[in-house]
Length: 175
Image (cartoon, rainbow, N blue to C red; front, side, top):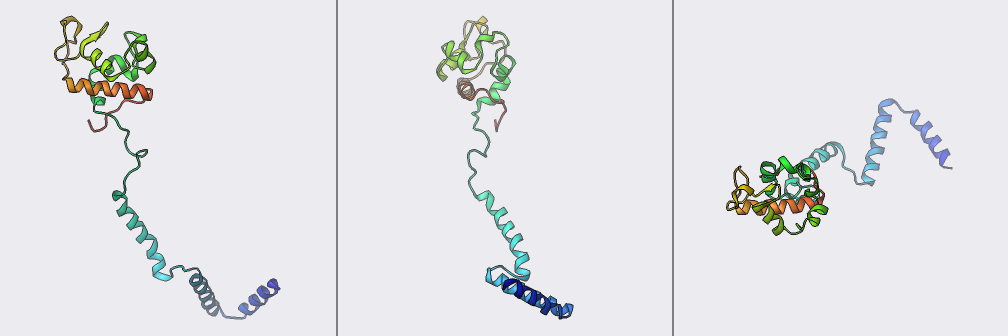
């Protein structure tokens, strides 16, 4: 029955001129769009750019999920690049392979807390020189610039965080 209706409609439409067919098709589309609540004409063409503009302007107002924002790196990142990366690039240790900054080596060497990492950074130990302002004896301390207590605290926090993360790329973020 439906096929017969379509065939009859097709034959009936084919008897119209092309302009009549266009008018009929426009009416049919308009009626169908109204049934589905779709915008028509100029409104249809404005809806997409208007929606795009609204979304674009509202994006800066939305909070950025933590997974899409910059990684949370403490200020110690820049200090690490300046003072430590020469020997400890990517958490390693070019002078003493068993004394890396990876968690397994830190634990084995008794450097589990930030305070313990702070102390070894401040006073030094073995082949590692101390970087603290009041580091003694002088031969155990760096000959380069000394670091303030707050800077060493930031370094210890950074090293601990990086060790927990398995030493991903060391970059500076806003330091």
